[in-house]
Amino acid sequence: MRTSGGSSPKKGVFCRARQAMRGIARRFGTFCDMYTPYFGVAGYNVSRQARCYVSGLLMEEPRKNMERMEEYVEDCEYQAIQQFLTDSPWDDQALQVRIAQDVSREIGGTNAVLCIDETAITKKGDMSVGVARQHNGRLGKTDNCQVGVFATLANGKFGCIVGKRLYLPKKWTTDKARCDQAGIPKDRRTFKTKPQLALELVDEAIAAGVKFRYVGADALYGNNPQLLRGLMERKIKFIADVHMNQGIYTEDPEPYLPRRRTSIGPKYKNLRCRGIVQTVKSIVSSIEDRQWRDIPVRESTKGTLFHKAFHRQVWLWDGDERKAQCWWLVIVKRDDGVIKAFISNANASTGQGELVRGHAQRFWIERSFQDAKTSLGMADYRTPDIPPLYSSFSLKFHLRAGVPPCIFIHKFWLCSHERAHAYTGTNSMGDQLQFDLAVQSISGWGVST
Image (cartoon, rainbow, N blue to C red; front, side):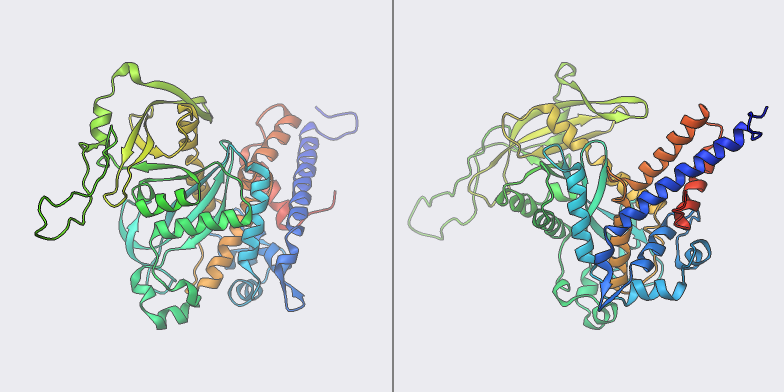
């Protein structure tokens, strides 16, 4: 059947869908224009190379390396992109700060959580900066990889990476020649643990004006007293996982320094306490069925997601402080049977639902890693130097911050899918066709209507 104008309905759908994709491409181009000043170098602007690189990150090819980008993206030159990432002295940190500020403007506030976590990228050989045989959380074993610590701002619906630190093992920080070859700044050659890097990311976010209510982290950070103490000194509330063997007290242990019974002999130097230590596991085993509460945590593809939760106040003492900390202990049981425990220094009046939903925000940093690796080629770079590594990461986060509210790939696909569905009333065009149309528009910077 044809319309009165002689064209088939199917052809009209394709034309309207292509126009919609070009509209998305125009908005994407306008977004990139906002960041053009950050690519100025000695009177010359390299934003064109930045656009080519970011456009290449959207291509359909599974491996998003510069060879494929040169084939796929119009006016993209391998040598120019290589020089742009490796030698061009544009300030990736200034771009990262701007991204963090823009993301905070979109999703920051009293409902936001700054989530801290690390991710590993498997590598072969020993040339890539920071690579070593170390724990690879994705594989659950020791492997040859790079590890980065990241900060993601999340608000329950969206999340975006706003900070990064490359973890340098001691075998790197103690090898001056290797650090010189990789271009590692001298102020970053001191060995720092992952919790120390996490605290730097928090300070960086605060300096950039990022607005959040809590800092969320897994048990690697939750079991680090120095990090928790640092957050408290900054008057920051945290929600941090703990291991099941974490020692806790159900009553104030009242730490004290024993006195000598006689004047003879050395004085006591170590604090003692009056309480009886328990483990989180023992608390979990003592919870009765009627004590669990169903808490809605977020909307999922299958509807509202609920977790069972139990909370109570407990005391934690690291053996050094003169006063034990009274914090919330929250136990969360998921539908799949997995049980997690976390602690929080939130106010005594804080509701259980707020804490559980805040803890669930850590989903978004995992989602950020997944999107960055599967859709933006986060694990596809190959560089032995730290400047291009950080430049590449900054541009990938620049893309993720693209379309408010901040998850570009997800929002980009969703927008194209919904527009095509609106034109046809069905899903007959197919997801891949919609993505192809959109990427073709962006790859050629198709701004014509």
